Length: 273
Image (cartoon, rainbow, N blue to C red):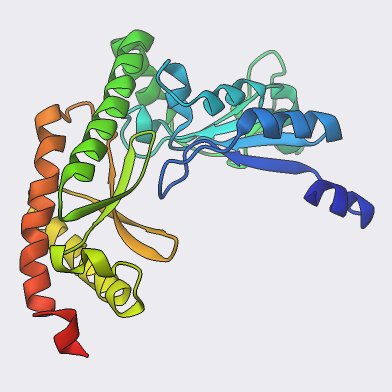
């Protein structure tokens, strides 16, 4: 609809961007459907796969990730799910000449040998470090098969964590996609009141304080996400050292710490009114 509206207004739609693993939850857009629309309207199809793009290499990945193969360009970050040291980002393009046409500039004070690959022609930076070396070395050392195994392990571990969180009486599972699980701590006496504005306000404050306590505690490291205006804890597994015992330990550590934080914030919500 937006493409048609832009065209009707006299604008020229130039690009549609799909997401292969959103930052907060790991959600994947319906990439095959978006690709079909882009082909129909002759619009460039770009995919932000900075986090989740590499998961397309494993059979366990969501079917929508197969749409990556239909993109005109894809952004991926090896320092995320290829476990490379910071920082390393890649732009993959179906037609390299399109990238060169966008960035190449040959001033008279530069000598260019057209027989060589001039990487300055493929991006905005004239001077840059050899970021690709660490990625190349890791790929040569581990090999594609090893990466498929470790990424598949991360996917399974995230699902196992979601299962464990879903079974815990003091935790509320909200989402699980790719290797990201989002959830929050909900005291048992507030379970029946979830959704009430005063309770939601307290749960947001509680989980904010809980996140700070967990990060300072050193037992587990989770981050945060905001989904549907709710403040959540976010566990993203992109470390090949993570084991089943680690993810199974997380729920009780979070709940134990949550009890302490909740006791400090309030005796009961009703008493705070």
